[in-house]
Length: 323
Image (cartoon, rainbow, N blue to C red; front, side, top):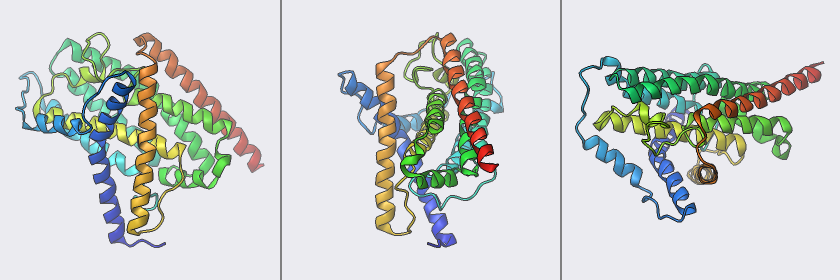
């Protein structure tokens, strides 16, 4: 079905609004599921919105030791995260613009935001922020290769670096999708995604314990509106990664018709997908505890090896098929 330019703009706007609105809810949903699994009540499902309203109404306090980097970082991070959301389809795969770079640019947009966050954390000359900044850079060296190699496997097997096209190609394969290459790649990508989202076992986003925190240490000196923007950006990034995992694991039931009923049904299916992935994340965080910092390297290196094995098998398979 041909979609006009106005329809594409409308669907893209709906896509962005849906992600921004869902980001705080999904973050709270994970906390709620974890609390229920642990026998607690947990926060109300709208707690994420309440927190953002609270931050946006508070005064912003800035250290006199900081420069323009500290002040502009929240908006740079939010902008890069919002652009990254244009690469990940939610309820349809045919409306997003074909942006240059595809899956590779997605990872480097995350890296650009991480660079500014780590740089701004060094600005106030706080020991906790500096420690978190160095840990974040160490993790990035381990996370980015795993995510890139995992996406390279999908690029190689589908012949496209556009994530929408990758999902379309995966959906055609049906039950034949679940090959050893695919399972290895998904496992490696899922593990690296937990680290990218600063989730257990790599980090605990709900603690301010100075010896273990990474993400919380990076934004420790932010307050008021700037803190609200940083938290919204973090929640949006988390939802983007969850959406990527959901659509790679369950690439089916994407809407192809520009009708109200089809779009509504595909949005409901998309919600079911991300809620399922969020529940799995909550279950993992309940079943295991945060590992020591020096053990993080071993887990991510194991994921790196899995992605390498999957890539080598995929290259050999493609070469044999080409011959």
